[in-house]
Image 1 (cartoon, rainbow, N blue to C red):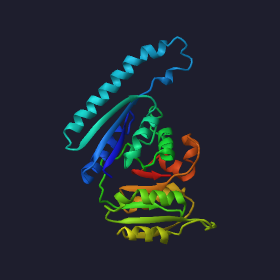
Image 2: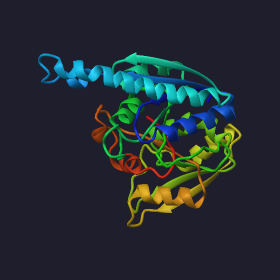
Image 3: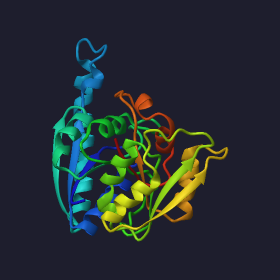
Image 4: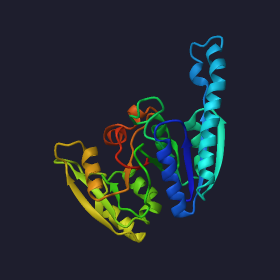
Length: 271
């Protein structure tokens, strides 16, 4: 993954995703494009005379400039190729406009000002609409070892197959790939691809994997997957994402939403 789009904002996971972007760029001799936006539309409702937006504009722009200066200073000392794109408007739209020639978009799990809890509406918009995978990096991430073990959450759906395919550049660097399926007590196999198909696909690309069946049990599927990944010291979980609505609460329902509510590691998502 050589062309990396990095979302720049003041949220709590900014430092973590910057470090992950740097680690990936160094490992792949890649390039980071920092995308920073300022959106004044949030003040429009009820601000009939524009007083609130007039007062807020200088402060918002000053804070944005300060964040840019801090991150640019750090980037100058990292030995990684990068450029900066600043624009006005919604972050989701600007990232989507920049994504067609990217390999991955790196985001935080939660929107700014929501106490660090995900999933972010930005993640929902990008996963559903972007032509590239989305890497969601939690606040606690300190680094990203591209050669570490990685886990693919497999349920036989087209979305999980898309995520597997999108993750190939990273999986090819991993020392061990695990294809993990949570086995439901009663589940229809109609229209589902068995794990063996995922393993065959990986093998054609020279990637060996362990096929792992996890009992459904009483714990939420998200917890079961995280536990399996942590036991194998995985640096990344790969998942398919589902939905049709632009609202994250509706788009990222079920397992995906619960995984992103409290991610234990970076999560690569594709729809």
